[in-house]
Length: 534
Image (cartoon, rainbow, N blue to C red; front, side, top):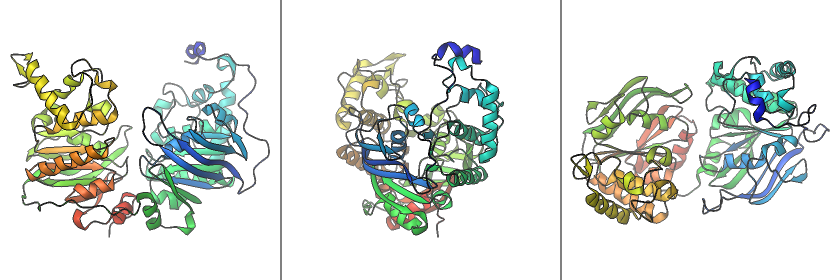
């Protein structure tokens, strides 16, 4: 396998490994890495800064938690500090010297390494072979025996038990996470950044991992770990920095703060307005999920006994931080993922593990979270995407032929109503549309029939205020006509404004439900982070 990779690797002078920044061992408390007024934007893609004037530092001998909701900018900041992104504005200092990081190699050479949330190893190769891929030696000529020996030493030193000769594809998720950490430790960095390191780990594996991070800190490393879980912050960190919508809301010593204060910093003090509506009158259940279990994409348990009901004419909001089972729940309900155990009833009929087409034809409309991957077919034209769920039926087609005149009239009406900006309905490929226009397309396609059941995940993400208002008004009108809506969102303002009842999902379980009109944002925020409902 290694021989087959040789021709793809650059010939670099053999005999030297990457240099790490500095030779002097840092003193405890010394600032190893610091950002000063760092900003990051993506011209042509985002109209606002993803990070706005962020001051952050990590010290030798400490574990520093970076806390925030999904989309707060945590990973972007980590990418800036580890050389994957360049800052739009501001400075980055490593051991007091201003640096310009052009690549992850630049960061590693200066002593900063990052462990990514998604595993990056080549699965057919062994642990040692994966590490050897990053060495500078020509044609991977660095003896694997030396790599294996050093990995064994690191494994023993930090308690990261793993066989250097084992193939990645034969390792568990926990073992693969250890390999990702060992890959970084091999280059002897002074600062180690970990992005959501426990996302695929069992509770025991997570506990062991944080013991490893504490050992690293005792040896003088500066450790940064990204999380959205309070128990991890209080169980492993010395300091915690909170980001909210790309802005820094504060840095606290972990011993001098509490869950309530961190929840306020994460979620803000804005009071959500519960939209006026008539009470839900019907007791007829449109969607019922009973004791549902399902595996996630890496074979880890994602749903652990989820049960919920949505009645006719009710909006049930499901709040939770990304990665707690929301995606898997939606995919099981819509037929995109198999349930391991439990039942899904739609309009009183058992639809567990039925095909997506069966569920669509039963009357369910789906607004997916991943609009480009799941919501549309990018190579198809805008008009074609508008009729993806209707082209087989009259009047969209007659005798197996598309009724182009009717389709054009129908699509023009929806484009006008939802204000989708598109040059040409039949010639413009959907892939060139902006994210907001794709979201409008999906909303129009799914809602024009006034479906009796809607499963909507982040339905207003990427929309401007006018489009958000239009979508909310449409949801409320459909509710009045008897439509049941399961609304999944991390935007608590949206959840609290639209919902009749609110459920909170954490680690694959519904940890509490409440009347939305009486709900408190702070309480929901605490439950989203793992605090038990009283």
